[in-house]
Amino acid sequence: MAKISPVSIKYNIIAHFEADGVLEKPDIIGAVFGQTEGLLGSDLEMRELQKEGKIGRVEVTLKTEDGKTKGTIEVPSALDKAETTIIAAALETIERIGPSNAKIEIEKIEDVRSNKRAYIVDRAKRLLEVMEKNVPESREMKENVRISTRMTKLHEYGEEKLPAGDLSSDEIIVVEGRADVINLIKNGINNVIAMDGTILPKTIQELSREKKITLFVDGDRGGKLIVKNVTANADIDYIAIAPDGKEVEELSAKEMLACLRKRFPARQRLNNEIEKVVEHENNKEITPEDKEKLKHLLEQVEGKRKALLLDHDLNIIREVSTRNISAALSKMINKVFAMVMDGIAIMPMINAAEKANCKYIVAKSFSQITEEINVKLLSL
Image (spheres, rainbow, N blue to C red):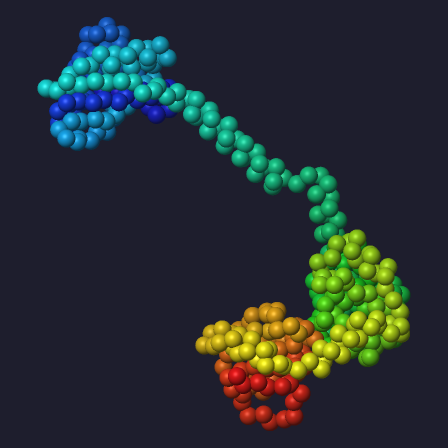
């Protein structure tokens, strides 16, 4: 018996049947071939068509309830449309299956090729979307080349190996971190160098004696405190500040230029808002309500070997592992007001918090304090 190839199938005849007795699958298949034999002539004899691979394996699904059997019959066909409909109509002439009265009705004749065409169209659309997404437009390609060329200008400068662009001009911009440098260079501003998280590198102090310096900081509490620290220890000419709540690394080219155009002389007293914020935050004391919040945060980290770095409003800035506290604080100078940590706060952690200008450390316990410190320790 020849087997019909799935590739050759054009149509699928689907019929529903009901019979009065209890039947098995061989009973239904036997009726399909036996009761259509000789009905349609030699050209459409179902047994011969199956041997030639023009119809496929007859599939039957059935179930029996209350002494009656019902289910579906599926006949795959590689015949043409007219021949397939004749075979389907012949199935409806079957009135008995085994010893039981039966009725067969054609539910539908599926055009398998139509389903394949629908799949092909849908798949082609999705493949086209992927191609269009992965193949950049010429303008995008030019932009990528432009950015790549600019990024080759990023290098390390000075004994601290600070991230920097082209410092050959008489004016340079000093920013807080490497990401700020990358963003400025990407947008065509190359005369930039970062302090790279340190309080004030010696390299920046030396450059401030030779060149005209613009200090460009984030628009948050940390940025404002950096202004206060750097202007007190280096010869800064101008100050530029990002919009409130924004960091230099996330600014667009338009926003950067706007900030730099609004820069003001460093000798000019900072506006009253900045001075009030700095003074107020440096003198802030923990209230009973604050202690309750800190106690709740301490319970959150207990047993997890975690530390929470908090801003002035006791909002969580960052969550770190207790073994990474010192490294995390070194990159967040003037940005952490309080730290809540699991376990025992030891001197290296306390010293790191002090260097970062953190005002409070909250922990269950503290190691023996061997030196004078400015950080306030709370055991809740």
